[in-house]
Each structure stands twice: as structure tokens, then as C-alpha cells.
Image 1 (cartoon, rainbow, N blue to C red):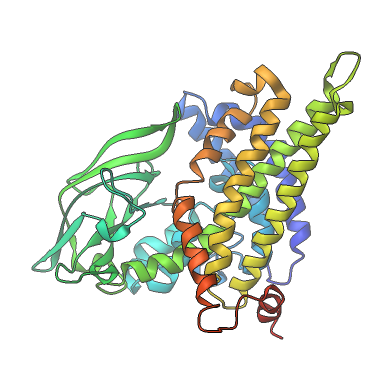
Image 2 (image 1 turned 90 degrees about the vertical axis):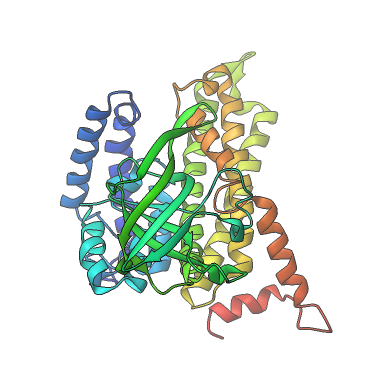
Length: 403
């Protein structure tokens, strides 16, 4: 697919695939028969590849379709409507692929990057640790000591997403023991079949198995060449990974909100009470209005942040803002949809129950709301210090527009 291909046409085809093939398969995909789920997933992946819907946002030079960042944002909004769509459309690996494409050695590109884009291997990323405040990442305790030409790694992580199906994990660990700050940490690529890589459990979240695993590293040994980038560059790499990643998160949340909004509005027309349709009840019309306004406001914030990123700006304020606003928006919209469904909304007979639990997670992972709120406020207030330029919203538009 060329970069100039009409993204809206691609979006429509992807949306049809999602609604006609992925939605009907979700009962199997989240069922207890894991082998049946994997067979179903494999079929859907093969169909997506055959229809040219695989790895749309990955750069061409690493085997993707090369859709420009801002166009792909609109695609990711549709992908977010189902938690399984990332695997089906090959976008599950996008953050890792972008990271490896920028920082991987020639050997690492051959061993991990090419098969990652093709879908032959799956990645995982390990940063968060139990028993400490992960909102202050300089407290991380997992260590890697260079012994000869091998790293010896010891530590304890959790919320390592997909560790059970991943071929390797990118581990954030302390390698520089005399450095007092973020420069003490590096990223090291560790195959999950390495001796000493011990998965303890799939951590249940709000009553469901989450796919986020708790893992211990017991004297893991990997070659020195498995370091990603340079020593002490772990947080530099992480920040460049997380910026676009949070845009992707927020657009997927908008996709989830769209699905909840659709379910809510359909339900209002399908049900009646006290002699008229629920759609005629003013209190429930308020749910529609509030959800519409929140989704559209969050959508514009997110698209603005994406335009800033696309123009080369780090967009730290914009990304921090949408992380908080997006998570709240998703929670509110799903909550209203459950209210409209009544008792059925609390069951797993609709997608809303799982969506609600995932929405609550969003206010914590990739940094809790409180950290983003504080960071955004500090950055804005800094611009007012000593008669500084302040924060002009219109000028921010002109900056990304190249004016």
C-alpha cells in the first residue's frame, strides 16, 4: 500500500472486517478453550493478511505498509473497538517495531525485527515492579551485571503483557550502579525461553485474567550484545517509545468508546419502559449528549496531539493531557452504556463488562493520572515564569501547521 492511498477507504474495509468477522468470533477468542481461540485467531490473521490489512502502520523498510503516522491514527481508532484486533491486524507489535527500527543492531534486526513485523514472533515489555512506586521509575530494582561478555539479570517484574506468548521481553533494568538518576538504566532483550525466566502467574485484574504476567528473573544470562541502544539509554528509548504509544492507546480508547456509544444508542431504541421507548426519556438522552460531547472533545485533543507528533514536536503537554482525559472519557462512556443496559450490562453477555474493567485500568497503566496531571501543570506554569511567553492555544496550532 502506498503512503498516498486513501486512508478512509482502508478504514472502511478494516471496519467491515472488524464488524463482520472479529465481533462474531469474540466469544471463541475469550473462551476457556485456548486451542480453539488460537485457531480462530490464526484464521483471522491469515484473512487480514490476504486482504492487505496487515501491519498498516509499520514502516515499509521493515516490511509494513508504511501508512503515515497521522493517517494511521484514524485506523487505530477502529482497531481499538475490539481487544483482539491488534493481534488480527498485526499492530500488536507496532511500538516495539518502531523502537527496534530506531535502536536495534544489525543482529537484533535480523533476529527480532523482521519476524516481529511478519507476525512470526510476539514481543513483551517489562518495566513495572511490585512492592515499589512505579510512578517513580528510578526506584526500579531489577539489575543487570556485565560478567565477561554476558549480562546476568536478577529481578522481579509484573504487568509484563503477553509474556506467555512472547518470544522475547525487553527488560528495563539497572546497569549503572553509580549513576543517581535515569541514566542508570538500560534495556536488554531477553528470549522468554532463557533459563531463569520464570513466569509466576497471569495477574487477575478486577476479576478477569488479564494477560499481564508476573515474572521473576533468576540469574538469567544473555550475551552482552542483547543490550538495546547504549548503556544508560533505557529511559531515553522508553520516552521515544511511549509518546506515539500513548497516542495509539488514546485512539484505541476512542474506538472502545465508539463501540460502547453504539451499543447504548441501539439499546435505547430497542427497549421501552412506562409506555414509550427508552430513547424518549430525557434523563437517558442526557447520557447520549454527555457521551457524544466527551468523545468528540477527547477525539479533537488526541488528533491535535497526533498532529504535533507528526510535525516533529515531542508534544509532552498534549500527550500527558490526553492520557488523563482519554481514560476518564472511556470510563464515563462505558459506565453510561452499562446503566442503559441495566442488569444485563453487568454480565458478560455484552462486551461492556470487560470494557468497563479495562477502562479502569487505563487510569493507572502508562503512568497514573496524578503523575500526568502534575507534569502537564508544571510544564505549562513554567512558561509563565519570569514574564515568559505563556501558553497560547492558537500558537500551538500554528506550530504544528508549520506557520
